[in-house]
Image (cartoon, rainbow, N blue to C red; front, side, top):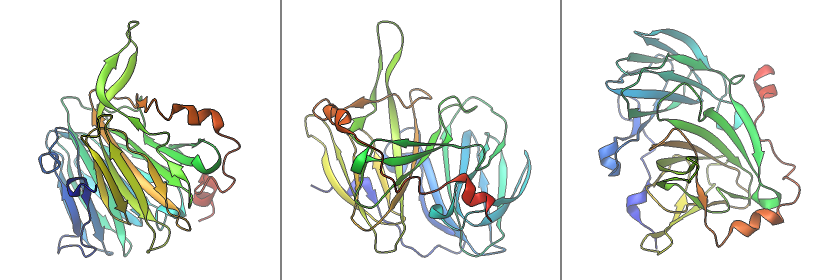
Length: 294
């Protein structure tokens, strides 16, 4: 079963402002997360007001000036696309007025936000600031790039990029984070998080499949995700598999009951971790050395 409420496939052409897709929290039917996808040519400008939200801009490709009442961040960016290197991003607090001015044609950015009652400093996150890890083994290996991880000076937003080689499984074994659970010792066992997946593929005809399901299968959706598709994960387990021949990228944006990625595996599939052998040698797909070579 495919649940059309969970898959957003925007038109590729931006409107006159550069906006391709916008998803306020109410439009997704949840409390926390909003996002927008913007594409501008050189000289194009896009305004944003953060209001009562903390905000992160993740530059997918190209360079731009950010002029804000928190200070100016000039010539931000570097990679041509998400497969060309590690990301640049900007964290901006509430009550910030932003003007994005593209410096290159085809500049692309995902802006995301969530309501907050806290203020944290504005910050330019560079490729040297992010951390990268290889997770899994064999055809379940993927690369995780931490942009705004738990512990970053933010309130609720958690943001990572995931690179999955062609034919590999990711977000696997299936896991969920849809209830807030604390152990007897006070340790957080699972956070209740809303999550957005934003997809890109190394080739335009590429695709991935994502299943979203609950234990009782009251929700059981199978979605085909192409470049620029947005998948909403309000609850349940949500594994991904990258089609053969097509490397997959997805941007994960999360917010909810804790600034954490605490989750629970589907107990039917946890055993798979014990079978992992050597990591896929194709990884990492992106490195800091790619930035240094520009």
